[in-house]
Image (cartoon, rainbow, N blue to C red; front, side, top):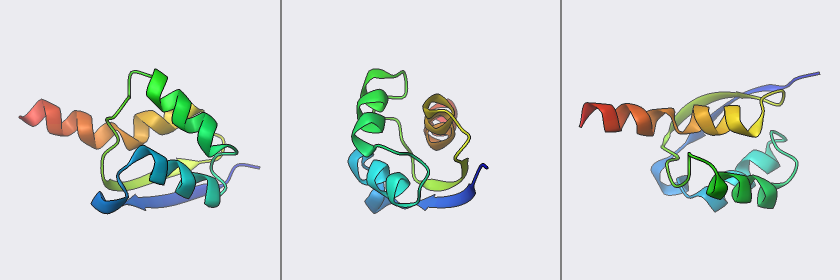
Amino acid sequence: DAKNLAEKIGKSDCTVKRITVVLEEKGLIRDAKMFYIQEKLSDYKDRIAAGTYELNTAMSVEEMLAAICSNAETAEETE
């Protein structure tokens, strides 16, 4: 049974370590350390952006990273 959650990531929370802890606390991921490592090894490394995101427990790590990095991609395209 998938769980939907709108999660707001503020600029002060925009560190990978802080976000992984929040996602784990909210039940969106099972292991904050593993998510952190996966982010560091992915194409989304250091691209997490502040914003409000619709996340779901059925999402893969790749899908969550794509969602929370989407504002960074938009900002890069407009610069």
